[in-house]
Length: 309
Image 1 (spheres, one colour):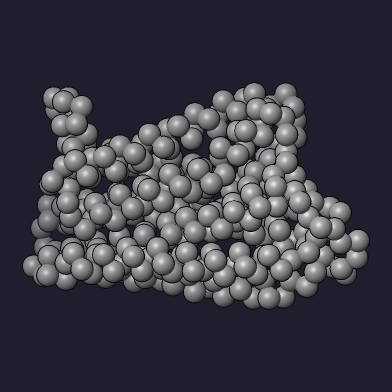
Image 2 (cartoon, rainbow, N blue to C red):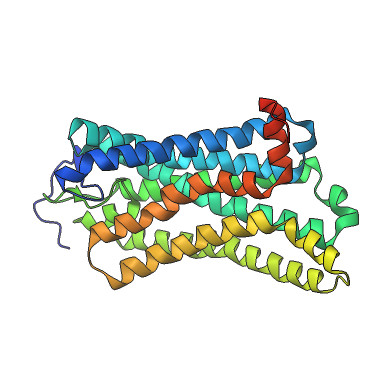
């Protein structure tokens, strides 16, 4: 776009997932319920891993970080969406929008990294069980978690700084329920080449890299499980990574669904609705998957609430 009619931007309008006023009370109740379930479920996972000494292992350290990231990820967008629905206002300040962009990228990419770290943990546990505690020592686990946080924070900072150089015309409507970097770039009147390149390389390196690590880890896991002679041994080995595999499948399938949805339709509201799957539904279902399929988490929660098995 040519940089004409540029304005000193002070605010944007978040159009949400629907402009039908009759649906707003239903959407408010739906997203409030989903947000509360997400926060409560992930807080219970964190509480269980902290309070139960049996869960002070690398796998549950990574799981508690995933739960914390999911709480923060949904808290970046849903509270503002609920406030806008309640006040019947679509306004978000420029500063608020840039802040949303930063934290939405941080915690979205952090989910990706933590899932990759958890896949590596399962790879070591199944393929090198006798060396597990030696390889997955406290120092390495700390480096993996800290490295994930630092990498995602720096990536988000870089992408947010490139967004600050954008200038906008008179159209300041974002057809989404959150300030997403891609939507800001589409609205910009100034040259977006730098932003496009940074987003492209970030997607390839920070999106494709962890995914490649997950695929490699599970290729080795499948190979190791196939080499086990007994059916019971195969089942036991597979059950140790079933929860993580379910969460990984949910996360990447919903991301793929959003990508395909945005490719086949020009309706921006449809893309916003599709993005609910990975930004709201997936963080809500993660604790359900782990609490239902993981005996350690179930046992810890029973001990916390003193419920007999």
